[in-house]
Image 1 (cartoon, rainbow over the protein chains, first blue to last red):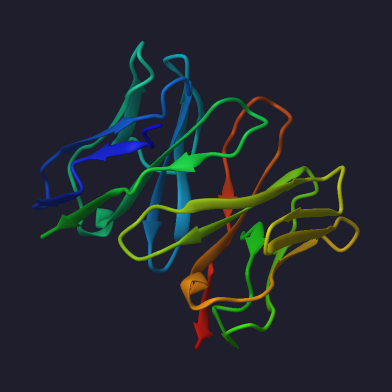
Image 2 (cartoon, chains in turn purple, yellow; image 1 turned 180 degrees about the vertical axis):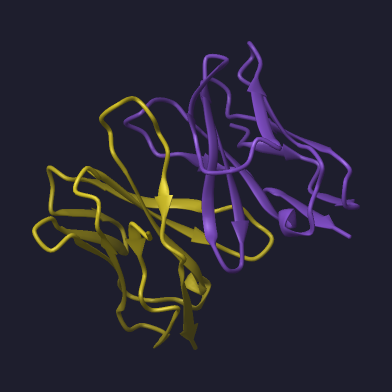
Length: 112
Length: 114
C-alpha cells in the first residue's frame, strides 16, 4: 500500500516568489493535514482538510493557504516568500479521527 | 504557550537497556496521544498511540504509559537497539470537535550505543 506522497522533495526559491506543494494521501484517507517543521519550533500545525473543506487552521499568516481536491489530494501555497519560510513542510493523512496520522517525507523548502 | 513538552532534548542509552522518553501536556482536553519516530530526511513514522481511557498500551518492544492526573506520558523501549536511534516526538490531540490537529512536542533525540 503506497504511503503519503509529497512532491517535490526539495525546492529552492527566492524572497517574494510563491510556491505550491503537493500531497497525495494514502488511498482511502480523506483527512489531510499540513505541518511546518523548523529547528527552533518543532512541528507546527498549518491546516487540515476533510472532504475538500478546511476543518481547522493554525496560527500562520494569510500568505499560507491550501486546498483539497475531490480525490483527496491536497496542495498548499505560500505567497510572497520570506526567509523565515525555509522549513520542512510535512503532509499527513488519516482514515478517520480515531486513527493515527501517517506522514509523507516532506518537501524541504529553502528561501534564498 | 507550549501545550506538549518534551523536556529532554537528548537521551543516550546502551544497546539492550531500556530507553524511557518522557512527555508532559497541559491541555486537559487532550485525550489521544501518539509517539512518532523520525530519521533525518524522512517524515515522522507512527509508533504507538494511547487513548485516555487506558493507562498502558504495548506493541512489541514499545510500551506507552499514560498518567492522566499528572498529565504525563512516557514511551519505554525494551530492549533498545542501535536502529532505534532517531528523534522521538510526542503528540496529542482532542477527539472532540472533529479536528484531527496534532500538537507536537519538540522532540527527544535518542542515541543507542552498541
